[in-house]
Image (tube, rainbow, N blue to C red; front, side, top):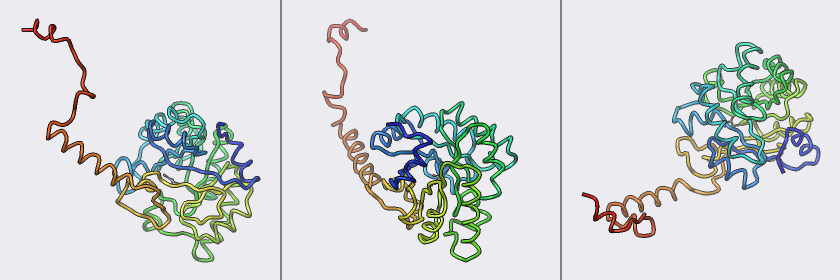
Length: 275
Ligand code: KIV
């Protein structure tokens, strides 16, 4: 059954965990969807894992829309969330709506995600007035990389923890359908999760969040540049790919591939008539 925006609340209330993975293309979206993932996030992490940048700051709206379109073509039941790239939602609520609207209208996304706490409330409210469901994102917010001084765990001091609690409450009141908590100590994530009515989706935020999200390249061993502590590698496809590609290269060089099975045929008479 297709996951809808209402299922976030239903699952929070029933205690059933929500599953989310990133997706960036048609084939992978189709596989993740068929494997039963509830929600697919077309994360701006694509800047790092697909495009090879050092961080997510230079990802553009056009890149995000291009990949979101591919994902929505592959997802049948999963709820697709488009991640708003840096500077597409910071300038004004009007510009935020215009850009978020493109995710829905041009790429078929069912919601957008944006990073930030209480300061984002006017933007979130404008999106909801425009009938666009919003997923919040607080804690370690990669688009604040330069302000945070790197990818660091957030909420470890009393002041930071109190600010995160206020941000979570502000996002809840603004009407988000869910919020990502990234790199937050587990007890703080549990505290926040128990005090808000919208589901928390953790990434490096412990087991007590209402759901979990990870970048699929990380769980499948496809991205070796950074290995965060919170990632569990479920399969090492990177190694399998290397073995398979080495075998392909060897077989081509030795003339073993293609063989009869992989070859199209033509009647010899036709060849003979050619000059
Ligand atoms: O861009 C992304 O993939 C994300 C998730 C890791 C939460 O924001």
